[in-house]
Length: 440
Image 1: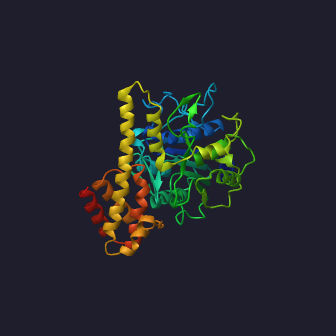
Image 2: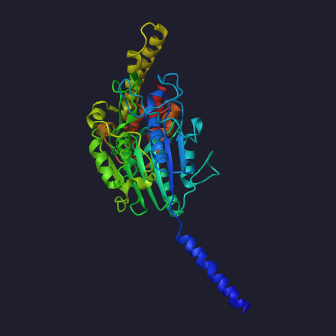
Image 3: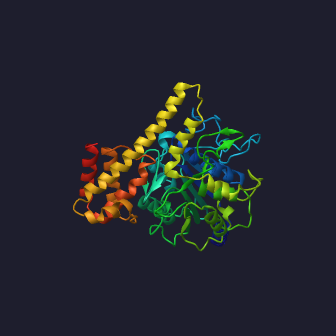
């Protein structure tokens, strides 16, 4: 009889545990990254704080959101409206929506690194300097990254993350049951190259990118369409792809699917070619399933005319130039020191751009001296990044011999990628980089 009671007890215990398992509710988790620094990159932190507000508004728990941002924009002395960030312009007399208010940032300053981002995704608290994902196999995960990029990489304030390492981390998440479904929205130049021929189509990940692997992404609400309540912020307030998906999300379309939103964003992002990758079988899922459920009124009741966003758009490679020009034009003519400093920043940017153009051209010619017929392909071609060991070595050599990869210099990383893919001779490329930059 005692044994029968134990058996019955064990049965009910097993039944209870099974019921618990079956009753597990899917939760929402998110990782948001603004991978840049400097006031001229205002738009990236504004984008990410706007995304944070969408998640919170729709009921995603703050403890389930991990945000990485350098956090140097709101309090920057260059910010005409200190302590606030805006992702959309308004007319004079109409206060803007401060997306920075309540935006909880977990990793700031020097902690915004590729290593921390990967550790966060993998849930590896032994390698991260802060919180990491705690999602499980029943959960939905949303990742949103906004910054600069180049073929096969996305940038951070210090360092880069290459496509092979990012996709390895995503595969790790799948293999270790860290999500049921995952959506990744990526804003960066050449962002399509991060997933093209890299992201598997059978691991329940759906990704969209601001551009294909051969073109820039674009900033929007740029000068002179950058004013909030009559105050010009002298820079782009957002990125075209990011603004388009978030202003669409702000409309609270409760029946809109991921595919529906993709088609809207693709149509309205007219300066680059929005792409989708990964597993498309669940793109019929409701879009808001990945950033909570609509729980309260949105920031905005209507979208800005797409024509305004297009007309005010600036190639991401040129946003720093646009910012410095706007700061100079709008500087106080009576403040001679301030105006001189603004002029010097603009001149320095122009001179650096010229130097970068010449340096990468020289590297291409130096490396291809015995392959003169291919120099044009190195300078103008768009080879798919596959030889990541060579790419990483070439970038490391450039940074060691020539200097940091600035936002504009990233434009020319495709020269290094093309050299790797065409010559398949890492040593030749490293010697060319060192030789050219030593001579400058």
